Length: 149
View 1: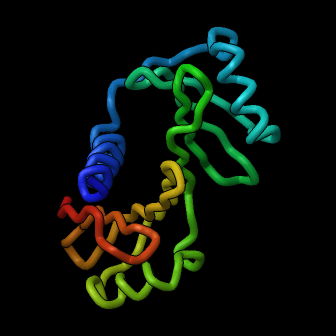
View 2: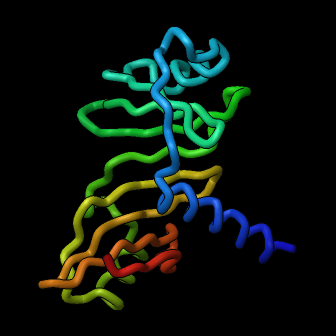
């Protein structure tokens, strides 16, 4: 059962990351107050907030301390996913070690931290001469997704 639950979580994560899904712009005045309140409680200093309705969830894109963020909330204001730009130097040791072991000659670009529930994932682009890969690691350095672009 635990394996099934983990598999479903990973499948959902990959769906969000890969599909980009259809999104519809929403004016802030049309975002339900329960969602706005939940968002403003967590990110009171968010700037340049743009709202979309995506896969039945509200997505806010914004900046906080010069870092790009995206959060997804369901219709009751519960957090489903948070994604933010992330610095390579701040990656966990296990992720750095996995990159060194598996992608030794690759350069790391466009790192993002993705949080779903209590789980953290690190999505990045890895480049070596003419080879480009999109890779997602869990917080323990395990490769969750690896695709050549």
